[in-house]
Length: 244
Image (cartoon, rainbow, N blue to C red; front, side, top):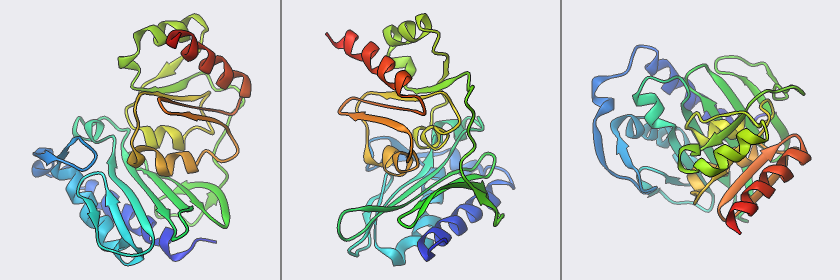
C-alpha cells in the first residue's frame, strides 16, 4: 500500500509530465549556474525542482542536485529533479526524475524513479517490494523482466574505451543512454547495469533501492547490477584486471 510520501511523489511527477506534454518551454533550455551536484543547472531542472519542493517540502529537508539543502526536518529527501537533463534538452526520450527519502534513523525507506518520456514509474517503500507502473494508473506490478535480455546499460561508457573493448570481446552488448537512476530502475529487465567512475548520492540513492533482489556490487569507483551473479562477477573481473 502506498504511503503519503510516495503518493506525493507520484503527483509531482504527474504534474511535471503533464506540463511537458504541451511542449518544452523555450526558457527551459537556458543554463543558469553550477548546481549543488557540480553540473550547470538548466531552467528545466529548476522548473522540476520547484514542483518537487511544492509536493515534498512538508515531509522533511530536501537535498537537491540543483539547489542543495532546502527546508528543514528530521527526514531527508534526496532528489534529482531531472535525471538525464542533457537527454531532455536534446529531446532524446530517456530522461526522468529520482527521489529517495532517508528517515530520522538514517535508513532509506522510500524511492521513486520516473521516466518522463514514456510515463513508466518505479516505486519502493519500507513496507512494499519494488513495483512498476504508469503515471495516471492505479495498476502496479513487479518490474518487467526477461531471462534473455540482449543488452546491458553502461553509463559513462564514453570515458572507458578499454573496458568497452573488453565487454565487446566477451559479447556483453550494451547501450549508454545517459540517465543513471533510470538505467538502474530498468535493471530488472536488461542484462546488466554498469557505472564506472566517481558517483554522487543524487544519481544513486533511489536507483539502487530499486535493485532489490538483484546481484549488486557497489565499490568506490564502480557499480554493477544484474540478475545473473556470473555476469556481475565477470564484469568486475574485467574492471579489476584493468586496474592492476
